[in-house]
Image 1 (tube, rainbow, N blue to C red):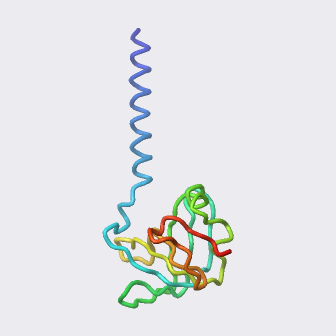
Image 2 (tube, helix red, strand yellow):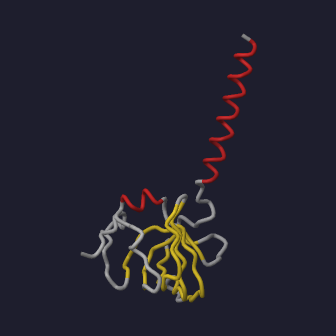
Image 3 (cartoon, one colour):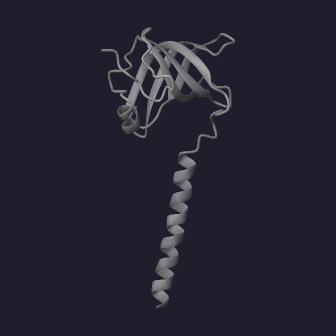
Length: 137
């Protein structure tokens, strides 16, 4: 009986530790969730793989103040979530101009977390909530 209690205690502790690390991984504490900025730039690279889709923009025009950053790194959602919204491996191609809404990094570094897609190459396809991307026909 003592071995069962010990094993159950160890299993519970391990589950607690894993849950805490999973929560920490999904924390968005580094992003300013109270502040949404619009970023316009040219796609340099796209990494469409889990755990998140990443886009790198060149000459990103950032926010209403008009700051230009040479390179802007953007974290998007998981591949499955992006696909469920209609974003695929062909949505963003190198050389295309995109307009995205982002939560900027708290540090002020050139990066942020995706909130919504405004347009790709001047084609506005996001719905009003910017939760679903509607690819051009």
